Image (cartoon, rainbow, N blue to C red):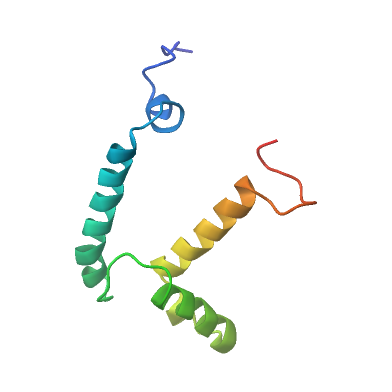
Length: 98
């Protein structure tokens, strides 16, 4: 097995090294800017957002049970919910990170 120097891995750069807040803001801005044309290509005429269309698609799927409401926005909302619960579970639930 090859030995990798500890401070050259992509995991170090992404998860261990402290980022400057402005670098994070620029990265989020680039993702949000790319969301507009990519959303139009997928048939959605909105930018990056989780409060209206994706959340309403979840409710419509749960009520009607029609698979046409499942899209990338639904998975975005569900992954945010699952990630936040995994990292900070409610009181009394076991933690994944502990």
